Image (tube, rainbow, N blue to C red; front, side):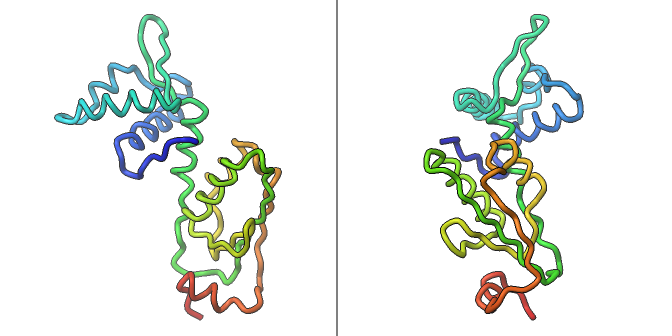
Length: 179
């Protein structure tokens, strides 16, 4: 089971920084390990270094040597953690009156991933209607969909948008939606 990384933590800043550096540079080598050490927050270098080692031990980042220099790089698992972090739904000011519903049937042998999906949906404000049916008044973030594609579970998931849902008063109350 992957480690949980808190929003705003040093670990999350490192992962997001590597992701941004890779996007901007267009290369797998984000920046040299020396630069990361230099950029560490003054007085917190020890916790920063500990965090880097913890991220390496958990398989989220790796050190790559190229031209006798060491570079930090996100692993596939690290990239998935970044996608999860970026997948947070931004709640619009006004509801469009449509319900978003997600159905899934992920095989039993992928129990851990099924739990990750449930956590992702709950993190994004979805409410459980049934064991594998979740609903939300706001659309799922594109980063969340990208994550689902990356882990290969998009084939087990169906998305829907409903213009009308009978007896939705309890849902409106759960989501604090005023008529």
